[in-house]
Length: 476
Image 1 (tube, rainbow, N blue to C red):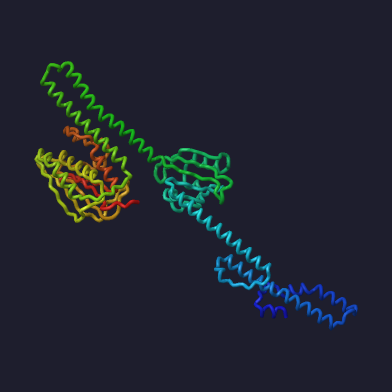
Image 2 (cartoon, one colour; image 1 turned 180 degrees about the vertical axis):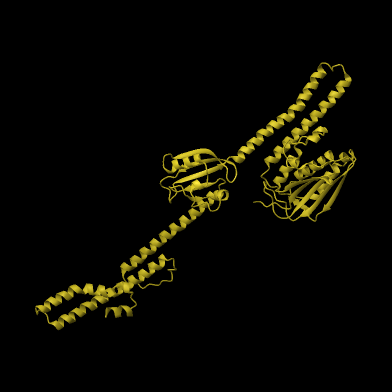
């Protein structure tokens, strides 16, 4: 009977409504049974009384069971993330209302906590990903359970869930990591070397996380790549050494001639004229060298600042050609200009681009064969040629080329032309003056503009230097 009633009311089998009614009615039924056995109550009256008690129990339990069943479905829907706003409930008991209110309050509390934690997690992840150096989070056994963007870019996107010993093959690093993980040391700092994927010198800071930190992470590893900074230090030291050497030679020449003029050539006008001319040439060379050094320093100072102004490339070419016409005519050369571009203006530092074209044209006049032509050409290109080592802009660009009909430059020398103070031996043998910094300046200016520099040289068409400058530079 109870099962039929429960089924008709939509009770679930798990509600055990009938069992509860029978259990609640059992003590009363037992009393009436004993009274009937001792003939203290008429059996018919006992049955009627028992039925009345069962009816009262049903009336008492029915609303509670229905409301508890509603609360159960409400909480289950909430646990599954369903929309609970549409779950209408008819509650009459104060206790059940209090339970639902408490459940709703708890749900709101944990929802707010979850939102706060998600926002904090997103914020923490964004901060870690913005850091330039790799950061790794390790669990107790050395597995990587977290890595910032720099670490994923350096060591691979699938770096997580790998053990740290699969990442670096350095015994000193792994020994230091083990000491921190085993709580033998709170922090370890060391410099170590790795040869994969490339030879690198790295600095690592390994530190225990406080016990208050959440999750499985017990240690954090910060990696700093010292390879680039060491190369820069070496370049700086080489630069100072080369600059000192380049300045020492003319200074020693001038010093020697001054001493000669003060002694043996004191009364020799012919020798004085000769020595003063040489001293003047050496002073001009030092002045040019110092000016180029200062220029290179200024360029490097603004290396990371992208140029913003729009300037006419054709006008720059024409100005350079006009300014060097007299110098070219001294070697019986002519400067020709060819314009194959529809782009009037490009994003650039006008003074620097003019310096680039002027340096290349001046070199073309200096090292070209006398009586030949210098050709300055500008044209449109869809893409800038790729560079292995530099960050090249994408999209349309212009190509400015400077060609002379000089001797072929051998391939082994082409790669070194933009090195500071590098000069071809044949140019030194011919006593052609130069500081060896002009092409280094060109390279750094082109790098600042996120362009590229190419050099082609052969025996029938001479040497062509081409710079590629993007029409616009994105501010990334």
